Image (tube, rainbow, N blue to C red; front, side, top):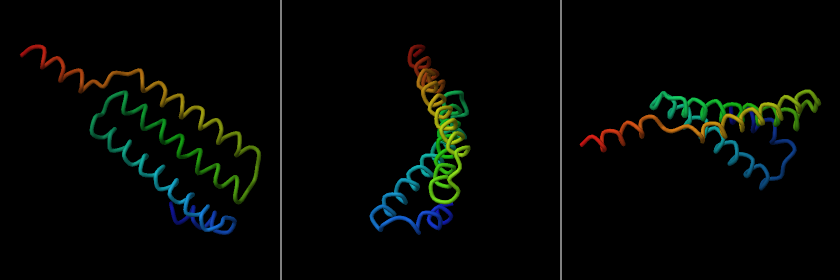
Length: 112
């Protein structure tokens, strides 16, 4: 995926802008991988909302890159913005949930 993004943005950016763009893309994909592993490990609502929020934000960034550097359609811009808003909604909603595993540990401490 990084190779694909590098091929798109390589033509229009300077070396420092390209380096910054690649670092940003690596961070976004690492965040996606970590949130997926978190969801596999915890398997609760909070981790699911975190994963869906990050997934939607990454998809909106991929659509935004394709819109900025190759196609330039207004429809893709609207889709990218909508995915970002929905993704940040999921990220905000997950902050209100209590991590169920932490709650179980606290119950065990209270019973001892």
